[in-house]
Length: 316
Image (cartoon, rainbow, N blue to C red; front, side, top):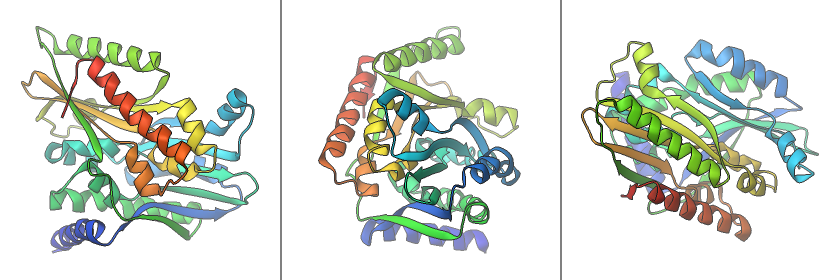
């Protein structure tokens, strides 16, 4: 009965987001500097409710100050999290969910404001961006968030602030396929591609801000994941671009960072399937109006697509 109710609610959430607008990102607002409370929560407490932290990036504001000579923030942190045991199996039905698996449990504090913000893109928006329509998958994914939100409320503060949006871009995901020759060792093929991918993006001033081997995580946890011979997710960041958004008045948009680019090879396939939310979703969901920011967001979407094509991928 509960599962049916969850599925019904998930279906309604999809319809509502498309017809009436939606809540795009959710932040809990705490009075004062909550950095210690946040770090204790993310390092020691979220694991008790099944969330796995990977590739934490704390106090990015310090790096902005060092590199660019100043910062408007007392704190800015990206912490990629995922409820592996619950979300991993959902990828079997809806592999595009890797566009937010993991997702950023975002924290920021502005200078001159005695408040700390901790939050994330809403699960409904994550599902809509990645194009997940399966009602059961939507319901189960959404159901992983109440315990996390309850913990944030307890540790950070009970005041909640949402961003709202009316529509997503017509094509919210960039997707590609890349042919491979499997040969005798798929592991060698993957390693060669990953090395080329990382070298190429880093050569274009991107940072490989994270890497999560979903297939290995599922195998280690004895969770059936046989649809895929490989499934991994890169976290991508462009430092100069990020400074121009997060350090120039829109730290809340960091809920979308770093970008999760999933890659998988289905069992026996000779293709790597690749996908990532377009940065244009930031503009839509976070209501970014500043033209300089909008232009930089659009430029990065174009550049990432160009780089992927240079790597031999075909845009879908």
